[in-house]
Image (tube, rainbow over all chains, first blue to last red; front, top):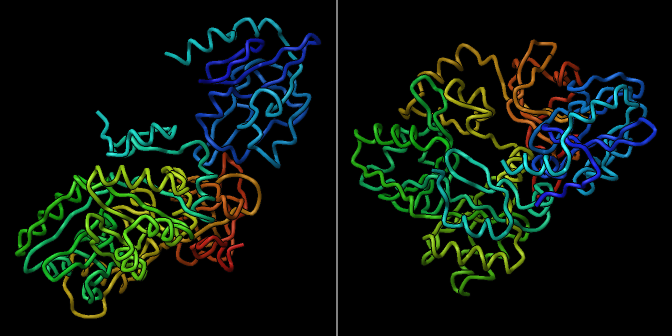
Length: 128
Length: 362
């Protein structure tokens, strides 16, 4: 059974978004996604300062099995990336929602969050 | 309806993640494919390979038939129990499949071909067999477990009756024999020592459970793929198919052209050797970060090529691949990964065997 924290937003392509009160958001991939990909061995993250638009491919995670694009769940400017992942991408497997975060952005339009799934809707979509 | 092996329930009980493989529902991993990989390189792991096709060739002309069917020369198999690797070619020299042949007695040989190519292989073997006094008998009732790794043989032998263990323990690599209800072969697809054991379904379930209890890790197709890639072993349908010959697939060593033996593909191979082979299959090691995958474009000073297999190598801790390149390509090359050209060295596989990175690879 997949772990789906209730305080996060989710996308159909299995990213999660943690929205902060200061207008920033942290982004990662869901437990379901890391499990489906298997052992992660490489991540390619955006560069701090990049402007990314909702729906754009902005990062890549690769497992032994396959490469998978990460799509920007919301638009914004990249303000931080998780540098720990370069040396140890498997952190995403062991802790997808905390230490395994990918990058942080400054949101352009917080209303974009409204279009994302909550935990309940995401769980339902996984059951379909 | 996907097909299930007799070990299907055992896989589910071990929390396997199941995937479709050539119509069979097979385990891709039981949690971590990298851990499974290391288990095989450092201790012992087991694979359900019951989906593979076992075919017995019986009859007075069994040897003559295989001599004609295979690119390697079955005359090399002199003593009962000996086995070898060979390609089965069409008349154009294209590879129909690769297989292992076991010589059991003059009227009984066994071949094991790939699961994904079952239908075309059987059609070809049966059509070629018509001209010979042989009987071609598939053995779909046999299950097969590959136990691989430095501790694999010891683990298996510890479960056998002492007299059987003594005899099976003396078998040299690439030898096999029937020991009661077990057909035990000292072969594999990982670059490690071990056994491939064929048996009836109920015996297989019991052996699987005994091996589990003995501490042998169940391993899925994911680890099997990275192990064979590190070991420099081709995967049919990916590294070779009917559009290429063994010469273009790093398999010249499996072709026996020395004497006058007639076999399927001989004329085409002679002609290709005469005219020169322009492509070769080599190994690549990515110098920086990233992962090599099948189908990536390779740029060399001698022209372009393509990767055929590629993955992250758990033993080397970097990406490795097979690539089909122009024959003059040597030294280094670049691989196009999502539009970036990344540096690779060109090497001669295997990359890793017997738990170690091979010399000259890194």
